[in-house]
Amino acid sequence: MTRTRRYPFNVLLNEFSAVGDEFASLFGRLSGHPDAGSFPLNIWHDENAIYVEGDLPGVDRASLEVTVTGGDELLIKAKRPAPAPADNVTWLRRERATGEFARVIPLPVPVDAEKVEATYTNGVLKVTLPKIAAVKPRTVPVTIGD
Image (cartoon, one colour):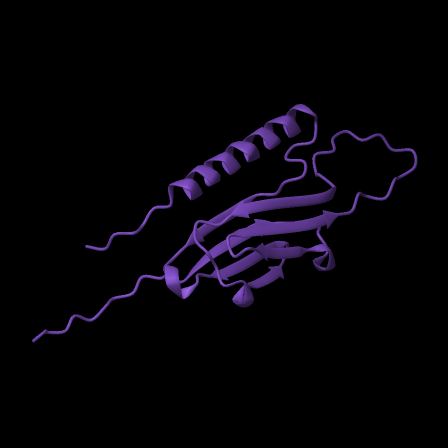
């Protein structure tokens, strides 16, 4: 039976992060700017890496910044420009957030910052964060002793 070690403080940090995201989303909706300053993410992992996908349509690749700090935190920053002001128009609805966006994601295990890869295709940012060898499961061969 394989046991995986749980990191209770990481679980707690992830929960606080999720609560913070919910508050940001709620206050964004109440202020008329849904999800202002945020963007949706999917995050999952396997035995080799942590994977992050984020929807950032309309963001120029040059404005994206992906940073791993301390091997246990991912920072994603981006900018989406505001539409050019048009003369003689009345906005009926403005739901697409513009400006600077940033997300800080605490990672459940340390990653190898030197091997992180990020791609941006069709408005979707994909980040692969390889886990360091110390946190990968390893089967130890058992030998017969004397």
